[in-house]
Length: 323
Image (tube, rainbow, N blue to C red; front, side, top):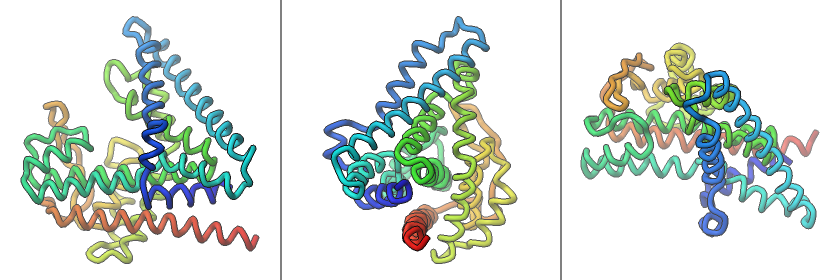
């Protein structure tokens, strides 16, 4: 059931994205998750609380998110199965599950950066500022390209591979639970004075849930590099193994390093956040100066990796009929 759900949800999202008619009717699940997390942040995260209290309340939030997610997924699944045959119930459940994936939207956002750069550097800076957190107003063309490609690689892991993985493992409940924790990490999992303790549980849980998918994303990118011209599967694997640990995150460095190796470029490196210069090490050993063509090659690699993931799920599903 879960394998079929993941495959159909991935196919729906790849083909049409999250259906607009559904968005107009019920909104987007991530918006609901964001509202709940924001409510908890406002009510449970007080500057007057001790660090122990903040951390305890953050743990309580994570437990609540997991419980609500698991219950919601089971309730929706039970609802559709109560009046539809199993094979028909799968369709509306998969359509809802498609909202947990970002294959199409991620491609569109990164492609928009390349198209904006084709027009002017300022347009490229503005477009990439919509998908990254670093300062973009002073980036040159190479910096804009690097930011877009890094965002594509990291989001491939936590926006495509990880939710697909947890949908396969845990059905709709697993997918919702993953997305809730990932949303919490993006909202409160920061090392700032306000969130160091309150967001600790969200950040650590997200690290655990993304550990295997991040490394699985290396396999998809390297496999895609076998068929995408101008990319190298061997470099993807070797650079990921060598450089992934240079990243501050225990997971984000794996897809980024694999992407750097596949393209033969250097990613990460120095950047600025809120006017503060951060001197991160480089990943990869290729060109430092990137071009618009590199974004488009990265997009071809990304699209192929997404297709390989769906194709593998389809093969696994077919094999289940012989077991």
